[in-house]
Image 1 (cartoon, rainbow, N blue to C red):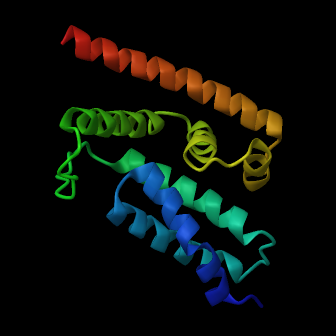
Image 2: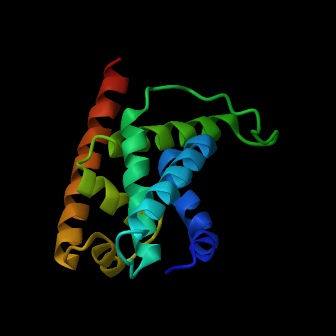
Length: 164
């Protein structure tokens, strides 16, 4: 039998970080983290898990992308903005983050997971392949397609904005 408390202690911060980077919301990241550990606990009973870190990373990424796809467009009020921050750069950064999240939600599930792990979590191609149970070549292909699709989505959005 495994020591569940130890697994949670060793992985909770990482699961939350993955969810937060993908979702950009503390509340949503907390919900995803709770869902991931609840689901993982159920998986552990019938079978033995060899790589908890990989499994939880994968689950956090999938659940976060699912949450991102279910989201309705909203605009959060951020009352914690630094007083000396340049408002225009802050607005641009926030807008770009939201556009990226929206674009990620339009990728295929595999592409979204690979892109998120590679660019938001800085996970290596080989680690992603191992976590997802695919070849490193499949990861490279999914990453290429994700970047191409994101570029196209960003170009379309920019055209819509400029054409008004």
